[in-house]
Length: 417
Image (cartoon, rainbow, N blue to C red):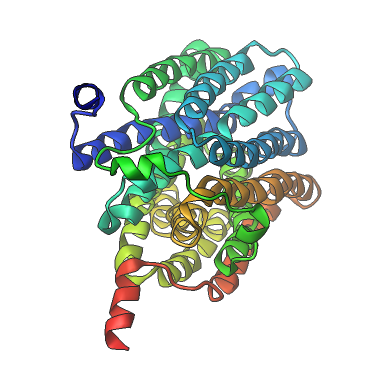
């Protein structure tokens, strides 16, 4: 038995595994957002085939958020019941890549709607599985930073910087359908990396801990926790800010400001730069100053990002302001992963993450763009920008109700007391 354990024990050290896991999950969630963002950048190219109205664009964005929400809640609960995350993550990565590519085959709005719905069903499982794996492998001093890199910077780099450049280039060169087709390749590669290198439990855990099953925590008990409830309220407001802004900004820049596709792509790339920067800086700073202070302060800046889209007419100035004010994606890690992870028992972690993400996607990601799209058809695209700003403003008020969870801050408070 001792010989067998030695043969099967992972050869990688805990610190090295932490970095390896971060790299793989960084790619996984980054390509989730690469695929999710593709539609917004390809919408101007699809007009000749589909003639998408603002309301239809909102429906396409919303249905993905709807199925994402339902899948996230189901996958989180299923994972905690089974005690398994890796198989669910592999299946999710494979399926979202397949369904994203299928969007390029569609010839009508209904078909495209179905493809986006199936894509959201697969993608919804990726974040709760990834963050649950990451939090268990992270050192306490790097917990916020790791979770920020995984959720914020990855999506910013691949979804915010790489996607507008690559997707627009593919659409200009080969057509918008090809841009959808190529998305299956990175998904297959990432699924292989997860299968080969990701462990169900990080190395270094005592055997006794593996053998003892943690007691199950009912969902109703999770929903009684103050931080979980507030994070559930914050999620739809912040998702409204994010999904509305990212869905309608490319169209606003090309239709309302009459900027060309190259200028639009460059400005949207600035959002990606900010996404990468604040994606790790915000949670990293929160490790030191506290989760609540970081969430409140950076969300105040986020209120001004959609307002700048409306009132700033210089592409250079607008891009600069977007880099400075597109801070919300770093906050996503705090309310959607880090704060819940530091609040709930480990046995309920994936459930809590799935519920918060699901409620956010359902109310903010699904309903937000539908309302914004309808409002834009009635009052103009600037209505969507003001709706996004309003969502962030509500988050500022809600964040004051959170209880601090950052370990370093709690230790300082305990020492002072």
